[in-house]
Image (cartoon, rainbow, N blue to C red):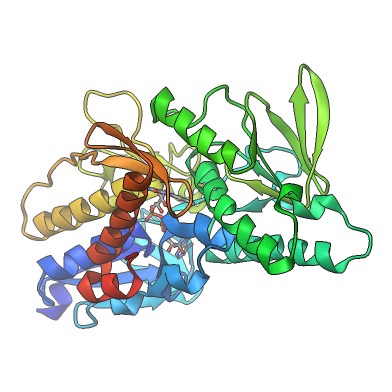
Length: 402
Ligand code: FAD
């Protein structure tokens, strides 16, 4: 009977949440559960492409599509609303559009940028966090180039971009910039030698997930295209002029018209407000992806800190893991509805590819190092596969990278 149907509530339509829902609608009949998906936008966006929108190498429309295109209306109630409170004990979620009760909850609210309290970073640096922040950044970069040409007193800082962090996002963004800068220079008639791209990284080593050989490949590739690296150089502040760094105990001001912070993310702020034992927006989950004391609450994606059995450190935050967790949770919900025990999550690491613009990259795929055009090709396959898994063949043809 309809009133006996369990209420399954999924928060967030990113990789983890949308994968949970698309798998649930495949696995369950319309009578099996009342499924509601809540997301603050009517669209889903490919977060892993945000560096491209940020640099301006693709348009923002290219990485988003309506959530409605992926959900089966007969089985899923999709609500566009912002979640404002999760009351785990009352089993209720508050949003700006109303209150929703649940029997089973899936929290998939994703990440936000983390500036670690660095003075002025939040106020003065651009962040690569969502569609809006990325659009703002690409427009700003182009405005600065246009301003350089239009102004009588040329200010070289208009053509300088500082990137804080040589992690995955920082390197992928720099790769896109090395594609974008020649386009902008040609459009505005600017001598490319005047453009300055500087990457500032506090750690002595970049991209720790890759071998030294691959890291050297990426550094050489980007340096040949005009990127200067300042490694082992902590950023201690950010202001309207750029970054303040510390070199040999002395503070130095690096000046640029654009400063971008790419060096940290954390899980949603709602996590600390809703659960105990949360660190930087992430909660350690049990092996079946529920959380301690709540067998009916799953946490997945960037809000989860999943430590595989026998290991000490949580898995990193990646789209690959978020999607695998989403699929797993859908199956565990099916088990629960059938009165069966839930299964433990096993992560299958297929590899990681870091793009260096549209035509090059580095990666480890099934344990093997790859670089160059092969890596760039594989990255496009991975990006297209993600759309296929969430939206099917039609959407993959429309939005995929061919
Ligand atoms: P998200 O994708 O962040 O989705 C969360 C969803 O919840 C969003 O739709 C958001 O709008 C919604 N939401 C948030 N708060 C609320 C609220 N209060 N109410 C309602 N809705 C809300 N990973 C890889 O595996 N490979 C890569 O190559 C890769 N490249 C990356 C490149 C960049 C530039 C970035 C920034 C990240 C990259 N990542 C990559 C990491 C990957 O994008 C994240 O790990 C992944 O997006 C996490 O998925 P998620 O579903 O947990 O969260």
